[in-house]
Image (cartoon, rainbow, N blue to C red):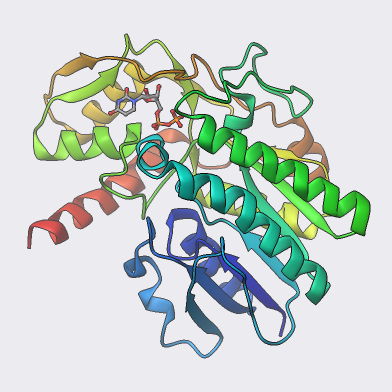
Length: 315
Ligand code: UDP
């Protein structure tokens, strides 16, 4: 049985990765400091013999007994309000945490995949964004703590690859949505869905003309799985190129929930990217991957989850 360590295991993406590797019959070690993760996302795995959980902050020395085949580093605050609230932890997990895990990978002779982000492109002046684009990031702006931590993560990962010959993979994740997103993480989808279900005004920031391209979580996990098993060591975009303005996105969610909430406009956060869309030519060619779940289907599945989760919060 192959053994995989997944950091950020109790988070949105980490928990879906745990499920996927359990399904593929791996022995899975989940690690999380539960800063933004939630044990509810993985409690169904606790009875399994091939699942173990370590409550640990990867920004400090990481020890895992036994062999490891793969490490997937998905620990980090990941929503803008989280990393504004926890700027130092965000910088540490992307930098020191990544360094610790690269060291662990080297000592175990394991392959490591790190979760990078479309935020490395900042407020992009090239559209859509191919992997060759170097980005437009304000290092000292409020988002800099996340963007620069992830850019450092990419740099140190490539250094371990080039200098130590470590097997590394870097996925640049674009906006992803689906069950297990935190209801109050402040991102557009959780905000709009919760507001629509609870009968509150829908808060669009700015004039809503900024764009994003939303990928359903199952598609993303499939792309990451294929990237890990590929032999491609340079950064790769995984995301859904279907682009939409935030105002249209809010309108789609209002229509889907059948609510009649009105949109209210609030100030645009500082350095909020004006446009974002992945160029996924590489993922198509190298991984034979592309997203399969369209927004209508993905939003419907996510709405079911949000309705249940909001009910759970009330009871
Ligand atoms: N946004 C919004 N209303 C909200 C939350 C977010 O209009 O209640 C906007 C945000 O300003 C950004 C877009 O939606 O332009 C996507 O934001 P999110 O936080 O989901 O992710 P980002 O892509 O900015 O990291």
